[in-house]
Image 1 (cartoon, rainbow, N blue to C red):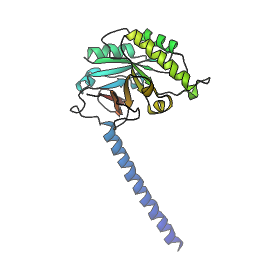
Image 2 (image 1 turned 90 degrees about the vertical axis):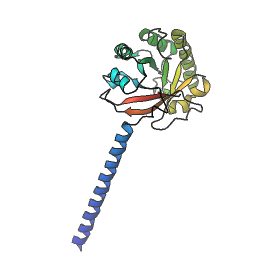
Image 3 (image 1 turned 60 degrees about the vertical axis):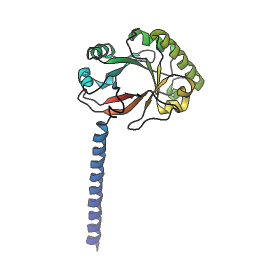
Image 4 (image 1 turned 120 degrees about the vertical axis):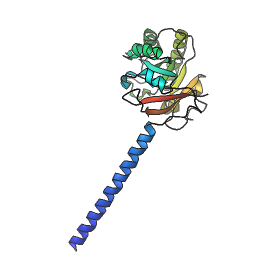
Length: 234
């Protein structure tokens, strides 16, 4: 009797192991398919990528050959952070024939004055640059001192005005879904939107996007690490 019970347990264990292997294989296949997916050029002819220092070395000529027409580069973070590769990437991307834009990562814990001062020290005033983008993802919950939602909204508006004064171009706002739910920048500020949505067009802002992060883990021969693949609404 004990042997029979042991045999049934062993059979059940083998069955569970087979099912786990099948599940793992299916997950790996889906991840592979996802990493190589991007919207078609016919539907979205204007496509590109977001690049920052965490992406490592990027071959912009290969990126151009893959069909990219533009690239956005992370430039500054909060009041002090700067992307170590920005200047080099800017030159290389332009040499490859790509249009280039700069991204500032907004820090709700810091004032607009410090953040705009940081931005203008690294991003040149250049009419050939694409519209500046402010990336909005961090919430104020982890700030050393309490920052109210109203204060975050106020500092963001000030930063928008300061960056636009420097670049003489309207800012593109890029809120994450969490940031939009909390602070409502898309509903409060009439600016073009850059939204996230792996594989699906994003709708969380309540109005149409201009730029869409269609795949945040796009694998390509242009870089060793996956890139964030972007498309522009036609």
